[in-house]
Length: 498
Image 1: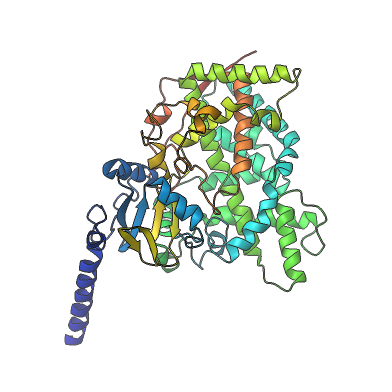
Image 2 (image 1 turned 180 degrees about the horizontal axis):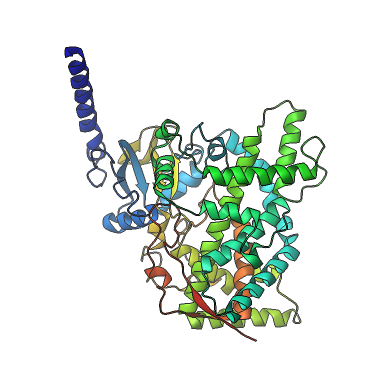
């Protein structure tokens, strides 16, 4: 009994002295910070506030180049300076090559995908997967895009004729699931029309949040050491189980991995070639590694794109002058092409369309923050050097809403990103897709999808607000997730133009 009491006393003493050291970490370095919570550190917002909302708030509270915080008891640094962000993400990216988040060995699909995995596997996979997102590959998708946008408009017309209240995010998620399924895996589904398909069933389960899911993501992003202890997973198990069945069926249909791949048409072909080359070179590439890349392309793309288009559509509903200007720009571009439909190349030349999308992503970036971890001691400036292993968080959304860089940042104003104005923006104050070598690999695909979607919708419908639904900027954000998305359905009124 005395031995147990002694052990408890020693443990409590160790925790006490450890806490005394932890809580003064940033004070001793003269770094501005809020006092840490004795258990959660700086993470008292978890499950009560979206991380992007927290980042935005502390940016406004401190207005300093960096702010100290704690990931539970681990000191971390939030970067509010575009110059320091540039050094971390680009100039010294070799020091910050890896991310802090991790899904652990108990979750191979979650831990091996391009979003979460670290070097050397990250470099290998990134190099091999880049071929999927070339300009030539995106041009080859034009027929698919045209078909799907026509189906999208047909679905909207059908819902309007039946006086249905349209959940805009769900509508666009049906469409983006089809788009990614076809572009990445060659699937020919019809969720855009019907709202249902095997792949859409998978993505719907991924969108459901509960307490366990929230705790899983909180641990993966901010306390990865505990992921294996509690066997948390990045993706819901039922989503991955269904997705694996679809993946295996499509791979089998194409001939598995035993034959060489003569032509790369989509992501699945790239994954098949990775496996084939690994077999030839006697390297180990497991099925989980390949499924992980397919999964992150689907799950990382369908909802982020759908949410961005949802916000853009709702902003256009509340800013009819911007909507009509965009409509007129699209009509003028179509006239210049002799009435022919606008393809990806033509749409990319319409500056105002791109500006509408960029302004949407400024106000509503998918995450709003970028995490890295220092591999060595690193000098932030003349006053601060952080030790190896320190997580850093580039506060993108804070800079997106800084009135020094973006006057009246709460106002939706696409003119900020017209070429003559965009050239004046401070570098690294706009990062909806990240920055540096670990930027979003699907950025080009996302822009292409958003341009085609918005152009098609605006050309076919007038978009008006519905009074029962909040403005996008007034709608609260999901608290349990890590990505920035509305916590309730949003709806607008679509009026056919002809």
